[in-house]
Amino acid sequence: MATLTVIGGPMFAGKSEELLRRIKNADLAGLTIEAFRPVLDTRQDGIATWRMNSEGEFVVAEKYEPVTVVNSPEDIYTVVGAKEPNMIIFDEAQFYPDWIVDVVKNLIFERLRKFGVLPQEVVVAGLDMWADGTPAGQMPNLLAMADVAIKIRGTCYLCKKPKKPSVMTYKERAGEGQVEVGGFKIYKPACRGCWRPPKK
Ligand SMILES: [Zn+2]
Image 1: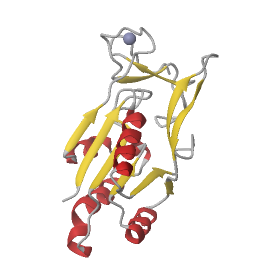
Image 2: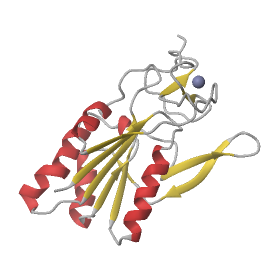
Image 3: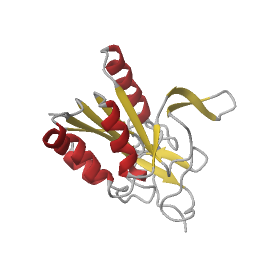
Image 4: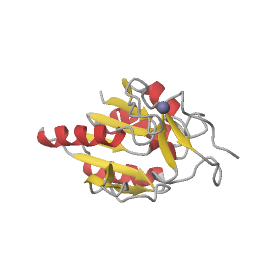
């Protein structure tokens, strides 16, 4: 059976670091990997981790490529059907339409029945809550389906207290709707004490 691991957490807490760690381990073990990201995520090409440079700007620290940009379920099935990878990665899962749940179900159940093949592991990473504190996209359903659900917590960038980990994503002002694609200029990881809903 394929295992499903879902990694959730706020922005800038280390979800991509965890994905890259798993990709490296799989690569060392000789497993084949296919990674996907939704077309809505326009911030970078691959799966990237970030670090702060001496000017206090966030820059890419490490990046995994290639990552297939996904418009529809067919984009995923075509690649998976052709390559039958051992490990399938979905990053930024909160940005996928609702069909991502059926695609993941298909990959961990149905393909076994239809084709007799399964990936060994499906790994999904994404924001678990939007900046207004409500569940993000289909992440709640994906976390519920997972064999292993991991919640990553980082540093609160508002108080920076080690005992108050970031579990939320903070955004000062409400932008254009709930889903606004952006980086550190707009979003900060925050602990529950510092977090406030975005000002309207
Ligand atoms: Zn805080």
